[in-house]
Image (tube, rainbow, N blue to C red; front, side, top):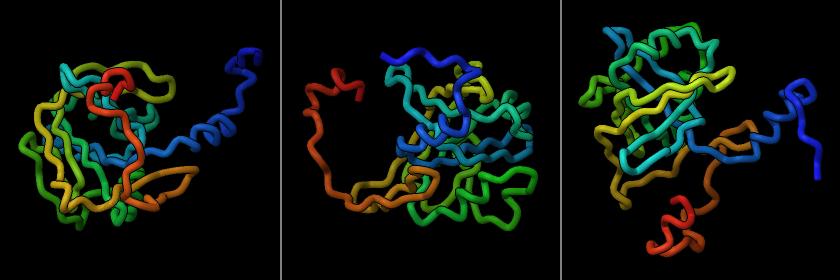
Length: 185
């Protein structure tokens, strides 16, 4: 058994390296907050609950737009496709007009929506939580859309500090629908 690490003994860079072994999808969270457009690339997007339908993402406390995010009446989350690395990089940067010269639409709740989405979720704020150097936003999903299976492109994946692609779209063994609750799916 390993001794518990204290925050003083934990190397932040090594911790980040260990976390990079967990592959994630990439999304962009957006909002139209009192006429000001917000957008940020997120790899911390996750489902929380089916009833009520809740999702979460986190934003760094150092983010320039954090105070505006806290006041947003609604926001959206767009799931990116494999070919959208440039868009992901654009919204991962801070300190510039990320929406300048960019073609985009809007979700019904006013949040910016990018073309070629795989899925998107319209949300209302449900809760915010302390997440250390991040703030965790929990949203109640009010609407969503996803592409039909016949139109689906591959998702943008982030693994070990780099964008990746799925080697195959073939499925592997999954639990039957009956066992969906046993596996927290």
